[in-house]
Length: 138
Image (spheres, one colour):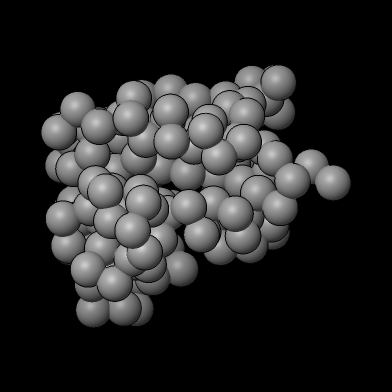
């Protein structure tokens, strides 16, 4: 059964020119891109998107990082989209990520780890809605 998920190609990946490689990697794993665009998050947008982490010590650094340059946001679809994307992304720390995962290939550090992905179907729906109106989704 088809499921939707959400991803952000983070500023470090965009800056290094890895956006196309990561998109090709995701498509190679069977994901269909329903909607996607490059954007530059405002501080308010980043604070809202990452509000779940507001009380965490890394929150301000995360907001600063995610507003440091353009990002590529995408709504994706495939069977088992959420767990599959989590597997394809790899561990949060690229040093711990499996070979061939996006974070192992393109991540620099636990802070600059190339890609964000939804952690549940419920959060995927919220995150997709944060960036894309229903009319944008194929």
